[in-house]
Figure 1 (cartoon, rainbow, N blue to C red):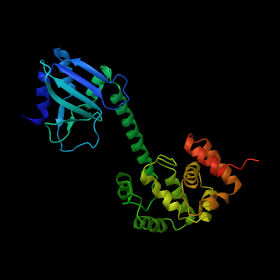
Figure 2: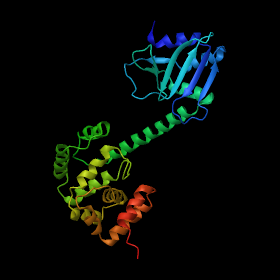
Figure 3: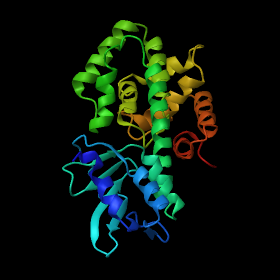
Figure 4: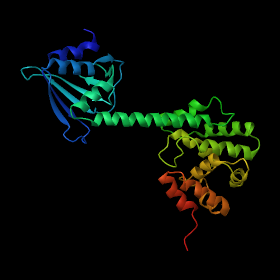
Length: 291
């Protein structure tokens, strides 16, 4: 028997499905569905149709548990739904990818368990936002760093920080491409101000421009921000760098020595950013002391 249709064969003989949410946050997250109704059975079978068994195992315990029983009350199978995309059943050697996981999520929501669908949609929205942030970050990458993007993006997949060798290579390339230190600072500020723009909770790869800025003398950083070419996007990078967590060897001294007009400019930028975390940090680092 084709493994992709094995579960459907069981579903054909199921007369009852007992379904429970495993998230612990679903109010009334357990239902019993009568599958003796041919229409109901057909609906669930379509929703649980399997496309393939690619040989992977999700590391989590699953989100929804399906227990299938025959007309005599004998349990036929226990199946776990993972992230709205795959199923786990002891008869399979790996998890199975659903043909259309949204059908099963919609079926669950229609039977009183909306949480998995809501979580799926929230996760998808976050993924889309993350992809857009990555695109804008890559678009802002300075000239001269061609061919390094994949290595930098891999940092977010592995969770590790940039190696000294990678930072040295990036620094060398930037020196060759931007011999003028002001132009080099502007390129780094533009890059660091892109992507998510957050001061915390950002993808690991977004920290690389900040690491490079941390090696830039404060005099060069100030010269870049004083340059007529400095725009809002450069201020975004400067705020993110200067009010972030331990971003410079002498961060406290460097921020304290900022000219007052620049300090006010960067504080105003943070205040209108709409990022509450960045605003709090900027108030702590950049706001004048209260009398």
